[in-house]
Length: 325
Image 1 (cartoon, one colour):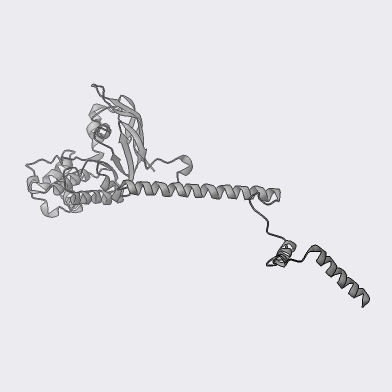
Image 2 (cartoon, one colour):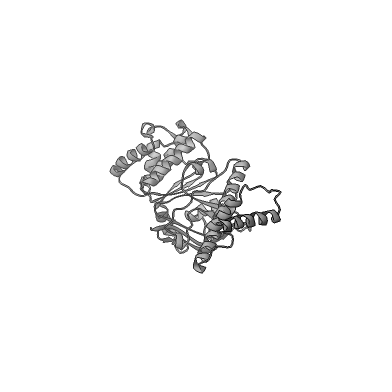
């Protein structure tokens, strides 16, 4: 797969001494959907600002859509940004423009022809379910509808990457799901999506790669694979609602590990004993037939009061009687 976003040992420290990012290395491939999660102040915003070339790292390299952001010339930055579609938490719509014109504006600033705009904008508005709202102003829309306008604007220039900065932060939970579901469908058509969010419930409901940033460092990444397991499926991140569920899951996992270790030990011992052609020390051979016969002969025989002398006398009597015959 083609890598579209690559961070190599990126660190960013602001003038006030804040270490926003520390030695961050991330690669995102074409067509991926990636959630960036973390608490407030973890470094998510700085990560996005570097992607959009609003900030420059103090060390490390950043390559996005084949642009080396450490070496890019100032005049090329607008051209670079047009390779991405940006969706902001606060929508950033132009209040005195209609829905149609807000979306069309993104095409006009890059010099698109009006005939192309008239064809492309209605198509994109239909994708986000806003065809009937095309002539309305942003103030006449709900929060979820405004966010869909922002998403349409990000899509209209056919960008290969969509960067969504907390796109569900200002809308209700139901509409939040619809926005992410829409991003999910856009991703299914081949567009790379990078979404920053703090809403773990949304992350749980969509099975995508999750990168967690804490105190400027990547502390987990469900998309990281070792070379020898590159072809193996990535395990889904599991979240637990209660401590009891977490405890039960941990206990179950530990028991499975113990059972597996026990099986491996027994298997190893059996293999060693087969090589030595002997039975394992913990395995007792069953009784031989003779031992079994002797056991069965004596089983259930009760002690009697007959003395050894009487047994001998009885045998002698039988022998004498036999000789007499």
